[in-house]
Image (cartoon, rainbow, N blue to C red; front, side, top):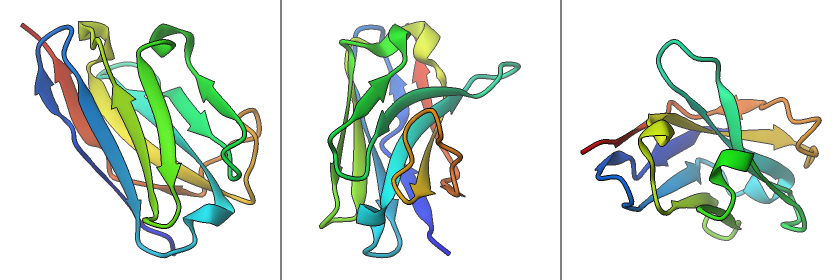
Length: 123
């Protein structure tokens, strides 16, 4: 199976930045659409950002538009989430997920998931 590993999380002050990485165990990430999700304690998991298989489409949850940027480097088997101007409300465990066949955001299921990386935004 495809394994995904997130990294880059940590604790930052409000207004700070972090760059999350999602690295795949096999050189086949080009066959998947990829998305980032997050879940705060006691809250439902929500979609944060999405990038299509061909990199032609992307999605951002309204609360992160203009602050977060998703990108992918299939040669390196990686997807990134650049997070700028972080807010306390962004505090959560962030997960990346891959969907076989390049599903659209609306049809995204997440066939493979990483274990998550903690992002904490606090003074």
